[in-house]
Image (tube, rainbow, N blue to C red; front, side, top):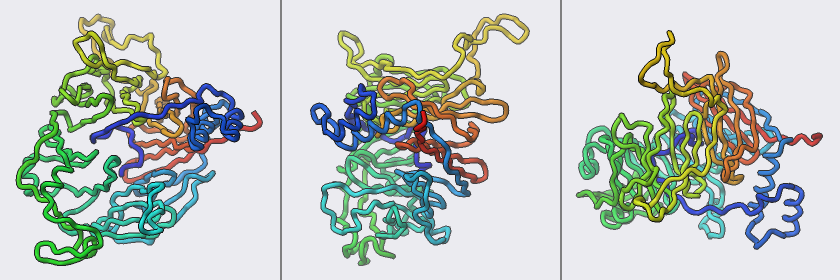
Length: 501
């Protein structure tokens, strides 16, 4: 887990599906919505109670009299993480709830040795309507991996350790993820120095690997991504089944799976490379899949192509019409592109002064089968009358060739785009450099049209040379900043309604 909110596109595989659209957006009055909720008079029963509540909250958030005020600030010498209403400090050892009007501390764990500190964590909540073996299994939990290879399940609201699994000493495990479609927990180690047997199978230039959507994704340092069926690998190469908590004999030693010092055996051994499902060369192993039908986004594997993105069919590698996206910017920060997290099969392309929401469309009577069209654009507040090309020198002489100007930090520049799924809003951070510091404001945009609905100015400065992360969660804005020398800050804003207005 990084800062808890991803502001730049992941390099992992993404697969999207359909999204339920709002049917009450045409209702403007909050009181009418509250009355309809009480009477249960929503058309065709399309809304459950949660969606009714979120639609009401969205309208309250976006109305003119609503303001966001900074209510809390906390600094730290270690990374700060946000997960679903909880703010974590001290390597997940200290937790605050951000749900109340001001964050309140839930727990603080006892200090531990550096080797025992939590390296990575993720929130886990039990499935509704499914019988679980133990009462504690219904408790919201933090799944955490420690520096000495213990996998812990920690009660999210108390910090109590509910379960411990020892992974073993044969690797240093550092990362934890959840493969949603397969409902599978994935724990990943750091890359071991030298060449292991598995690396000999997949090649000596393996740079990274991960499991997503039931596929093993292997990334090579030469700029090549290959996909394999993990289900097939497990079925054909598992030497024996190992079950947590049960006795197992492995390589002549008997022990309980998950207990110290036996751990969890590495029970899949490959002797030859499995069949490749898909492969594509790409720069920096940046590869994403999404859309309908499935397409992928890459940058061609040449340094001169950096900042240029190709949108191609996953089925036959054919480039979509208008599928080459190149903003041709000269900026300190590159633009980025990713499939929209709202599962609408759309694509978001973000540059310094333009956010484009794109959609794949099937074409008729065209040499291309699919094309990329722009649904809407969000533009930064800049003087568009100024020619972006320099045509004269400082002494007034004309130049024959035009050059792109370097992106000017004194003009409004987009720094982050985050999607709030429950309110169906795009949260956009724009920064303008004034004198010696950057001033940032947060705009809330309609996810369907791009129309700006609310503007909030952040009180603290925004230094573009620092790392930042922003969360918008229902009625809360959280800004996390990382400054040099391990200095972190967390700023929390809460929604306030001015009843006098």
